[in-house]
Length: 168
Image 1 (cartoon, rainbow, N blue to C red):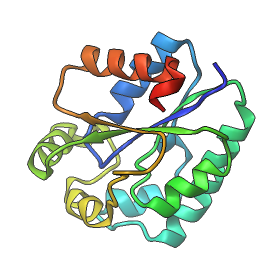
Image 2: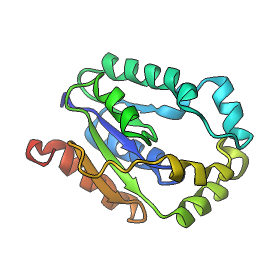
Image 3: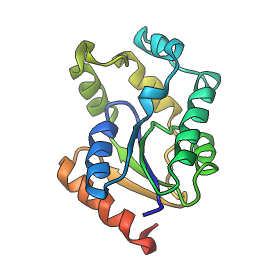
Image 4: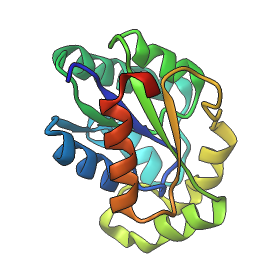
């Protein structure tokens, strides 16, 4: 396929679930962005402390490395909240696409709270994610999706979009 996609959005929007579904449907490797946070960043987030641009710099470097190591395409889950973060990832992979899972603050908070102790991300950080979010509206290679739509429908929309060069 030779095209990679970042499944992006705030915490609780469904990046991991959609990433798994899209990777399986398109037979692409899946890279979970959360797996590449430093131990210090994970600890900060578990304590409800928002990450700074400096905290995210090394993380974005590691994710960019993953994109470069998968030139045949991959699915990456990554919040990619700011345009500068997305541009940094774009530098690592020509034609990189972004599937933006749009969700309300209330729905995101409810989803994150329902994770319980199984996830390191504190539900207190949802507001900071929305404060940081620069929606990718108008950027090239972006598909905006309603995160509350059933997963199977979202997966189908992304798969069609990924295989159609004219929709990028």
